[in-house]
Length: 338
Image 1 (cartoon, rainbow, N blue to C red):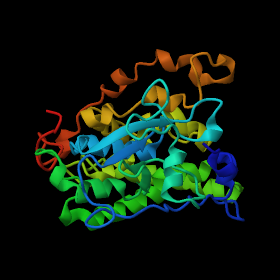
Image 2 (cartoon, one colour; image 1 turned 180 degrees about the vertical axis):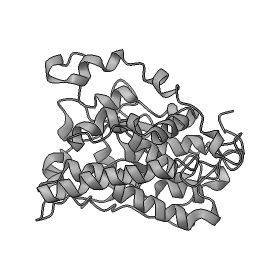
Image 3 (cartoon, one colour; image 1 turned 90 degrees about the horizontal axis):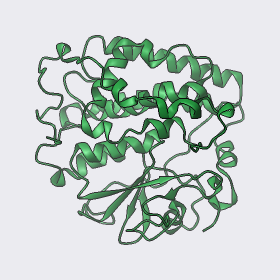
Image 4 (spheres, rainbow, N blue to C red; image 1 turned 180 degrees about the horizontal axis):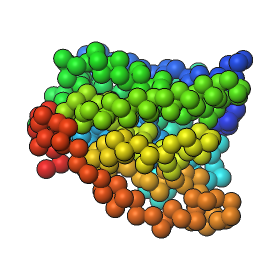
């Protein structure tokens, strides 16, 4: 196993900073869709590598559960172990750290099989072909849409329609807006290397949050009465805002709890099983810590284990009064979890 192509993540991230100090996230090199040909839609063929701390991969894990696709596409967890971050994402499937299906220790090995000249950061989500051991798709922006559209024949009988045909254009537009103004705006502020780049990202993020707060004052979910792909994307940013992103953004203009509509909206989503079972607040709060971390070096390490996140997030009030179909959160009217 080689160290991330001879470079640490910090050095790799610098390659994504332009000469004006703006962070420009790397493109997804492996973005092919699924269908007849090289990437057929087959049950049991693909394995999703995802990380509890990563919002981009968290959304893919949630969608697989919402759609009842976990028997068709399996999931495996990766993490960056303390003191070994230069090795990149490591599988955590068993005590030996070897993924039981793929037989490898490091996600970078699956990227190397995909392309011998792959030089970008190995990222999650990563969809791996179990037959070849290669990463075949790491397109976080479109992967959930592929699950929703291309794997429909293998979805649960009661799976929600997260990407309805009639709304796809507006969902695509909203997803693009969310990426630039909310999801990625946090990282544009975090990795900015000039004041101009930082403040543009900072104020842009909070302007986006204000706009969403207003939108959700009038409707239950982002597109109205039902959960769609866009809601999953916003949720994974909101769950990280107060306990992680606040430290990256700099001066806190507003917390999530200071947005009453967004706060109740996020908690209503959390109470859907596919969302809550794939949300790990302690790991989000302490991505680089251990229980033995020196408390004076980390505020989070002192108190994370004392916080009952589940009770806090289940205390939200229902927003069903904003819906014309208050008994259902999905277009098909039933939770696949029962």
